[in-house]
Each structure stands twice: as C-alpha cells, then as structure tokens.
Amino acid sequence: MSTDTKYSLIADGVGPVEVTVSDRGAGHAFLLLHGGGGPQSVGGFADLLASRGARVIMPTHPGFGATPRPDTLDSIAGLARVYAALLDQLELTDVTVVGNSIGGWIASELALLGSPRIGSLVLVDAAGIEVSGHPIVDFFALTLDQVAEFSYHNPDGFRIDQTAMSDAQRAVFAGNRSTLAVYGGETMGDPSLRVRLQNVTIPTLVVWGDSDRIVDLDYGRAYAAAIPGAAFVLLTDTGHMPQLETPEHLLTPVWEFATAHTQVRPNGG
Image 1: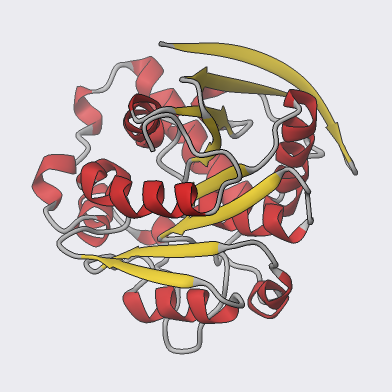
Image 2: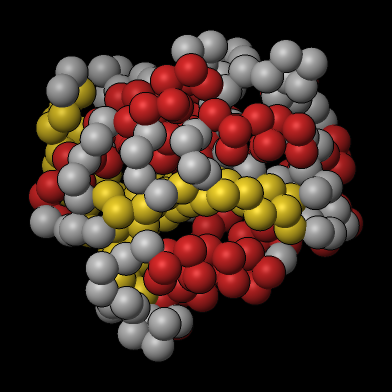
C-alpha cells in the first residue's frame, strides 16, 4: 500500500517547491526517479521492489502529472538539489537511487552532489551525456507510433492512442511533454556531464536494454565507462523502459546490486 504526501522543499537556488511523493513498503530505502513517461512509468516497478522488502520513495517531478512547477525549477541539476533536500527531510540513509531515462540523468546529478545519504546508484537507460556518433533521438520530432518503435523491443503492447484519452488525460500528457522540454532542453543532454561523472564515488550500476533506440547501446556503454568502477548489465529483448516492458528482468540486477552495496540488507534480501 502506498501513501502520497506533499512536501514543501527548499534547495539552493530553488524553492519553496511542492513535491508529491509516493511512499510504499518497508526496508532498505530506494529513491525511484521516473523519466519522461511520468510517474506511471515506474509505479509498477515500485510495487515490485516493495514486495521484495524495500521502502520505495517515488516523487513526481514538479510539472508532471498536472503538478505545479515553480519558474525557478527549470533544470535537471535543480531537480537533483530538490531531491537531496527531500532525502534530508526524510532523514534517510544508505539510499539506493534508481533512475530511468531523464530520471537517470537526475540520479547522476544527485550522485555528484555528494550527499552522504546515498549509498548506491542504478542508472537504467539514462539520458544526459553526449556521445559522439550516438546522439539521443530527437524525442519531440517523433510521432507517438515512432516513440513506441524506438522505445520498446515489442512496441505493439505500448502504443498510445490519444483519441481514446479523456480531455483531462490529454491535458496531463501535453503538460508532461512540455515539462520534459523545460528540464531536458532541446538535446536532452548536458555537454559537461560526461566529464563530471568521473567524480562519482558511490557504487554504480548501469543497466541497458539491448533494443533501446532512444539512447543506443554504445551510448549506454559510454555512460558506464565515464563512471569510475561502474558495472554494466545488458538486458536482452527489452528497450528504453525495461521497468515497463520486462520488469522482472530488471528487478534481478537492481535488487542484487542494492543488497550487495547496503549496510543493512533489505527484508527478504
């Protein structure tokens, strides 16, 4: 069972900002950060983690899901500072931060802040760096069918039919898309991030779907190579969002890595 709580957070250069946070389960703490698909793209995976004996903290990035976003919060780095403040307010320690797509980018920036509350980092098909010859696909130039084709190994089960949406659902969808553009910019990357990743000092796992065409496999390997000591796991027959397409397949490496790099082993770990 999950509970949703609204926190008013103040971070350096940002705030106050209201963040809606879903909190479920008990055990080792995970901070689960969603990508451009919104919080619904990681909700099922949060339930899986909780069922294994974890406490899962899942914020909705302000501006997604029809939540408010202050004008002062307009960058991935700003979001990272907000979530560092969230971990402080919750007084969590030894947290495993898991991020998919731009959630992985946020997680990377959060790791670079050096918060003592973070124990390990898992990046799942993360965006944020620039890799010569392997650009991030221009998401905003794609049709919805193309988004599915580029994002999934088996796209037919994940196509979005906007004509079947209610007016409220279409408004949320449009709001998510415009918010993604604010945070990620035109390129969904930061030219400085790849070099700065050499300063990450916590244990890191990079997980990639072999069918990801949003950020391809070579991009993923470059991400792992940029982080000292990072481990790399390739998931077969899955794409950009394995937490949706093959959640059990993703759960195994995430759980094993988290339990291997935590001071207190999760219940049932």
